[in-house]
Image 1 (cartoon, rainbow, N blue to C red):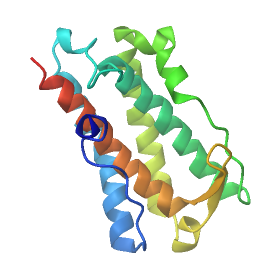
Image 2 (tube, rainbow, N blue to C red):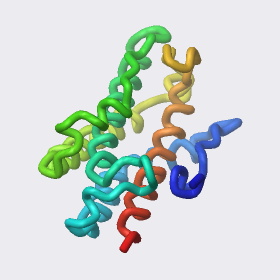
Image 3 (cartoon, rainbow, N blue to C red):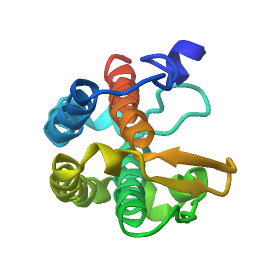
Image 4 (tube, rainbow, N blue to C red):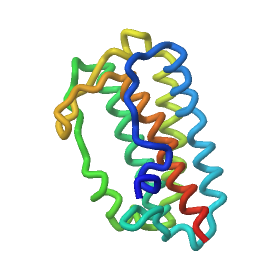
Length: 174
């Protein structure tokens, strides 16, 4: 079950960061919309209502979750860059993924367009950030922790592969 829930393993926070590591994470975010679109094109009709594990989200929910989650992360970065240690707005992702619109296959095109636009803007911001900017942080009220932007970047780099892994598990189901 662990391999289905975490197909690329659990997120492991980096102890240290460097320009090379940050550039690698930014490259992953930059390439993600194309990789996601390719993964989505490989899915057949019967895959869309399939979940990657018992109790997991369907392919439709995964794609719509990615749009919601990455939209929030992009906003969190902008808040952290323009405010002093802001408290971010959390959202109940499982409840959002269970909303009717997040279960509709016709929402996939809009979510892919959102992801493409969000990542274009987000990567534009990331490429102009300084090492001082990457040390800025936001406060997450659910976890009651501060997250530096270099940590959030690493997490969302992982998040991309994590959910591509879920879609790959779905695609490989008969």
